[in-house]
Structures are given as structure tokens and as C-alpha cells.
Image 1 (cartoon, rainbow, N blue to C red):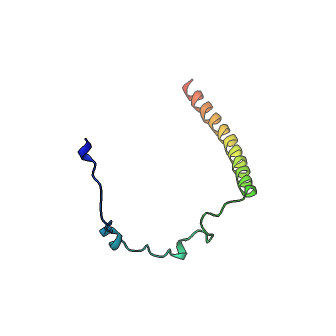
Image 2 (image 1 turned 30 degrees about the vertical axis):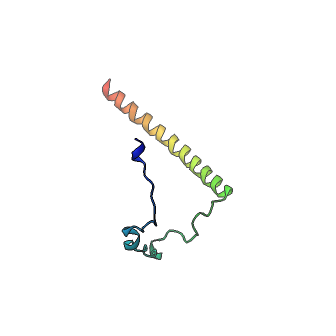
Image 3 (image 1 turned 90 degrees about the vertical axis):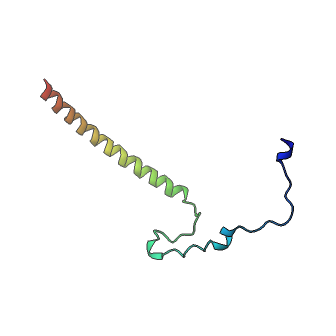
Amino acid sequence: MAGAVSTVSGELKPSILDRVRAAPPPPDSSLLLATRPPRQAVSYLTCSKLCAICFVAGAIFGYSLRGRVKRWASKILKKLS
């Protein structure tokens, strides 16, 4: 096992892929959703507003879904009995 480790001497040669790899094309501005710089944080107030809106929308949707499921279940139970 001692002979399995060898030392490397000399300079490191650059990989062929480093020379062949082309630079990525510039982004098409028509495909961008927002022009903000990357890594810009969303404010706590904006995040809180978004969470509150989603919570209210989910509660309303869940309440209406519950009513629809109850009606659907009662129709099926009436057909079965």
C-alpha cells in the first residue's frame, strides 16, 4: 500500500477542456423576467405581505373545496343507499 502514493513534480498542464470551452452567450433581454441584479434580497415586509396573501387565498380555497367535497360525498352516499 505504501507504493500506491506517488509525488507529483513539475508544472500542472492546463486541461484541453479549458482551452476549448467557449464563453456563454450573453442573455437575451427579451427572455428576462426581471432586470434586478442577482442576489438582491426581498424585504421582510414584501415577504410578509406575500405570505399573508397566500394564506388568505389558501384558506378561502380550502373552505370552498371543503363544501364541494361534502356535496360530492353526499351525492355518492345517496346513490349508494
